[in-house]
Length: 107
Image (cartoon, rainbow, N blue to C red; front, side):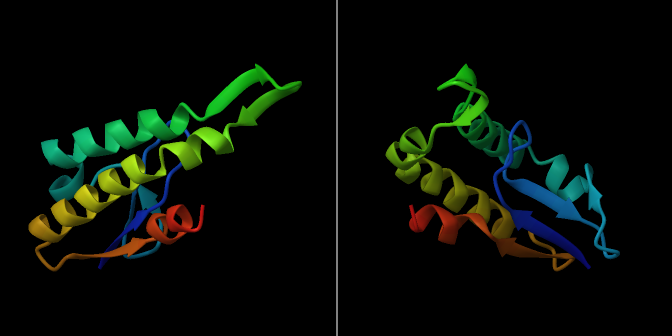
């Protein structure tokens, strides 16, 4: 069975797909070919990646935690939409592990 993990990462987006062997894969057609999920993942990726600032605050790469906290509710809405869409298209071939909602709620 495939596993879909929801966890934000720079330039990737929150949707991570793992095959039954636990190896991350880029494509699993039911998920990777879904235009709604692709758009939601893109929006979340752009938002999260925007928290990284380069050559800022005396560091080569700095994460803007204040901006992430400020936009937390918007990101939570995107994550909820991703979860809802995954639930809609789930044919029983994958499970979802949401690692992002609890992290965002703790901000």
